[in-house]
Length: 155
Image (cartoon, rainbow, N blue to C red; front, top):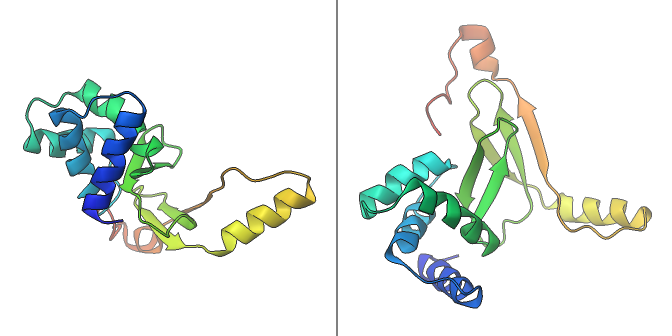
């Protein structure tokens, strides 16, 4: 989705939900949608403060659910207790995540089979799928052999 489309979508969502469109929320939005890789709330705070130094940690944590509920961001939980986020890309709802167990780097791979699989299995059980995810934890072969993970520090 284009930057402008995402901004309009987020602003409309805020209005529909009875929230104000504030400079701080829009700075957080700008910081979030310009990220190229997965990021944490604390990393987002640093980027948002570079845009508007009045952005607080509390505002970031209150705005993240608004960004995910409006489908501007996707939330990724890799089981470490810290959530990661990434801008939502139109047409990429069916992705599998492969997480490096050595450095927590998250790789995303298109997985168009997931919708078919989730629907087929659910229907056999008399259910209707509402969400699904595929996440693989994997060890870095290079790290295991050399002690250096080529992905470390590339979050």
